Amino acid sequence: MSSYPKPINQLIESLSYLPGIGPKTAERLAFYIITMSGNKVDHLITALQNAKNKVFNCSVCNNLTDRDPCLICQDERRESGLICVVQDPKDVIAIEKVRDFQGRYHVLQGVISPMEGIGPDDLNMKELLERINSENIKEILIATDPTVEGEATAMYLTKLVKPMGVKVTRLAYGLPMGGDLEYADEMTLQQAFEGRKEM
Ligand SMILES: [Zn+2]
Image 1 (cartoon, rainbow, N blue to C red):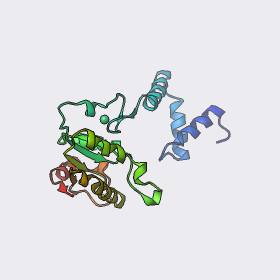
Image 2: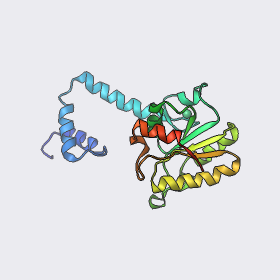
Image 3: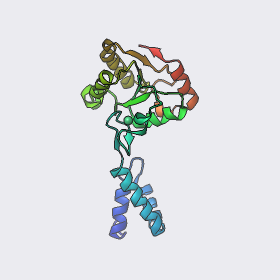
Image 4: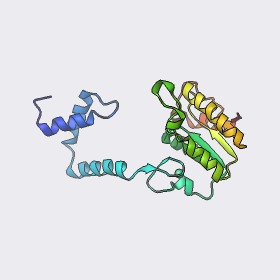
C-alpha cells in the first residue's frame, strides 16, 4: 500500500473505517472512486455531509429525522394513545413498511446488555416514562428484538410501565428467537402485530 500516492492511501484508510470493508475492498472502492466523474464524487461528498450534519434524533420519539418533531410524531392521523417501543431507528422503517401500525414510536437506542455495560439509564427510558405521563398513553407495544437482551428489556419496561396504569403488550413473535426485527419479512411482522400479547 505504501507505494500508492498519499491521497489514495488516505482514501483507502478512510474507507476501511466502514464496517464490513476490509483492506482489499477499501482498495477496490478507492480506485473506483478516482475513476468516477467529478460530479458524482461531489454528489457523494455532499450526501455524506448531509447525512451526517442534517440528520438528528427527534426530540419526542428519538427516531432519526431531518425535522423536529419527525413526520411520524407530527402526523395527526396517527393514534395518539399507542406507542410502539423499538430498539433501533431501522426497526421503525421495517414496521412502517407493513403499514398496519397506526400509533407512534419510541426508539430506545439499544437494549439492556450487562455484557456490553448497557443499563436502563443508557437508553431512552426516562423519556418514555415522561411521554406516558404527558401524552395520555393507553398502550405500550414493546417490539424489541426476540433476543435475550430484547426480552430482558421488555420485562424491565413492563415492570416500570404497568404500575402507571398503561396496557403493555409484546409482539407475538413468529419471529425466530435470536432474530432481528429489521430483517423480518412483512408477513411475519404483520402477524406479530396482529397477535400481540398482553404482558
Ligand atoms: Zn418523532
